[in-house]
Length: 131
Image (cartoon, rainbow, N blue to C red; front, side, top):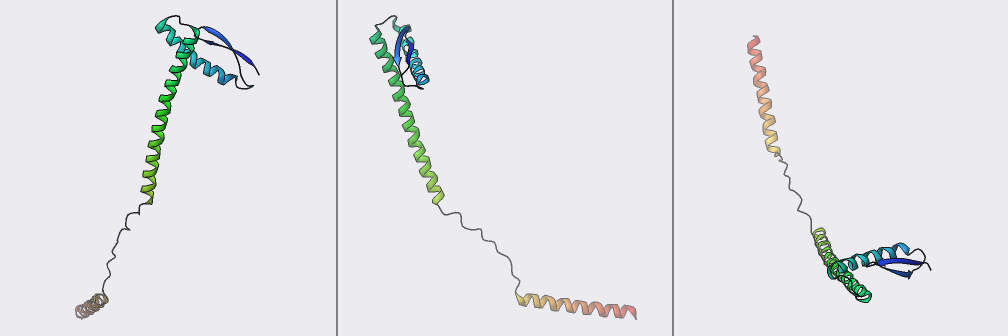
């Protein structure tokens, strides 16, 4: 178990940690030191216990605020996911109705008869023109 010296509020402390956890300890100590330094700037020199207590409370306050924001974000995410699920469960729009005009057979027969008469007339005209 390695012992690491950390600095908090300008004071050194020897702290033990698990093997491989040194980085996390140094990061946590740096966060606590940042709060302690802010206290020292505001109040000057204060007793070690009070400095550590106040710095810890300031970090706890920030953590509580971050947890509140996380809960709010999780709640909003749940709302968005529920809305998405509701939108996905809705039926799609009705299929677009496309009407293809159908010509009645009687009309086709009539047009064919007219075409045949027209051709017959054209043939007669050609015969008369040729004679």
